[in-house]
Length: 459
Image (spheres, rainbow, N blue to C red):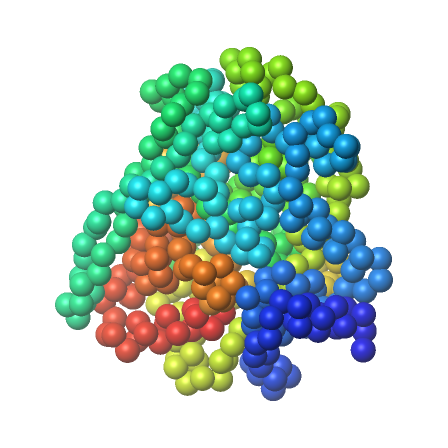
């Protein structure tokens, strides 16, 4: 047995007994969601935290170093643990694991609750069209601070009910969120500030998504809707800070990061207040004297070796195999998924190209995303541009693993801000390019709707 299979088996035992995902070889191709080199055949509450089963040797050791760093808390500088100090001075969390519990997805808050398992982005659009951080609070609200440095504010969410009816007369209710920020420490937010609350996304399969060839992603884009199907799909061009060049965005709710390494460094800086070689400037606002006077944990605070290990861990998380793939209702639901038009954005299969994870090259994966930007309508709009993404556009979220969200994270809140409490609610929020597919779902009979949901639950 290969070392990777041994570690997967040990992880299965340590994380809790549960049924394996399925027998494998005789199942449909989509059973191998992460390809044969990247699919984890475990369906327990630890299913998001296991390495690609093909990892061996030094790569597997780097994965487990990265996992320890991902889960450990950072502390205030100066401290005896010189490689793990420098938290803040203002921050969202003390560890990556705080928002990405079990490498899964952040929970949307209840009505009146604090927005804690995610971030609140801030920006302003100038008359010239230039996008700038909010002048007092920067590009992200930091609710917490180290001793002597107050957190910047406390984000809370309230909901307004939006009632609707399916085509067969069955009623439903959606939650329209309103974000308010209490206890602002540096004065009021600018009257023209743009605010966007975003829950932490799932961590699985990031290295696989990074290995989808760029030319294939660009070929899937249709920004002018030349085929007339109502689906455009646009690439976001973003800054690759290491190369000092423009690059294709792949990660983040608006595809505003080009690769996992930069996404990781951005999270260290924005969420934990830690500087890296990619983002060497700390989180302090120029008006926050207490923050500016706080001690540093080094220059940079995150050593290159730590950044590389955490980024590798993030790339090398395996993808759980879907379950019940031969169930007749699941098979019917997969057909409905395509017929309703969901596949137009949530593209199922991709063949991988060159990758740091050489063992996955040439594999076919089934993430159900095109990684492109789509206009999802006014209902989901945050009105906040991000590079070339406008205020109504969002990256197509991968669907793989979402059927295990309740088991792993104990909730099923979906969409960028966690407003949807089920797959059905998430679908019903779609507008814009997703309007036709939403209406196909809303007006379908109850059995057809149930089959589609059953398929999504199998992923």
